[in-house]
Length: 208
Image (cartoon, rainbow, N blue to C red; front, side):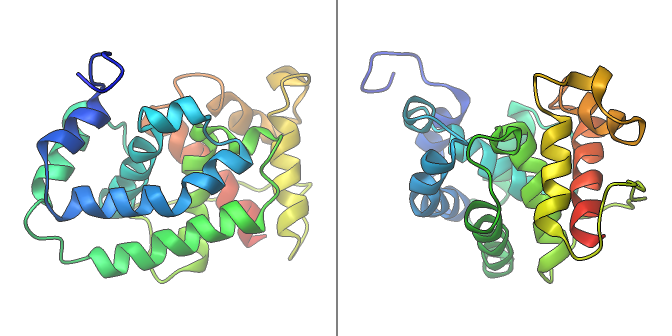
């Protein structure tokens, strides 16, 4: 039980169970970016209180190490256990993750857009990390060709993707070349294939 007499969720349980390097890595990252998460609308204060930020940061870190997958409670628990006493890549992971979060939270217009939703933010941050840092997300990715994308126009290209996710437009009104992206943000959003699809479109927008 937590201080609100509500049963602990998996994130709270992990942070109560593990006291090693990985737990404190996630804890430090949460503290550093919580204000930005709230300010951009990625999470509400209530979600932050229930450690939704810790879950997202853990899922992003999991993808940085193992590639984009369908994460489960068991797979995230395993990550905490595996790196509890030794986390040799901590400095590398921290540098790349901070770079990706800084760029996404402070260099991209997120507030008030669908890009701020955690499911999209997950794939966006991974795309930024893959594009801008020395760390590459494991996996082979064939990037889609999007007719609207313009060379060296990151903000415009991301706005194209944000428009495709606009709830007033929906999948049916998205251009044919953006329909897979819009669909991947509406159905089975925690599944590896949908996550990878969103990642590839975000990466294509950054690399256009």
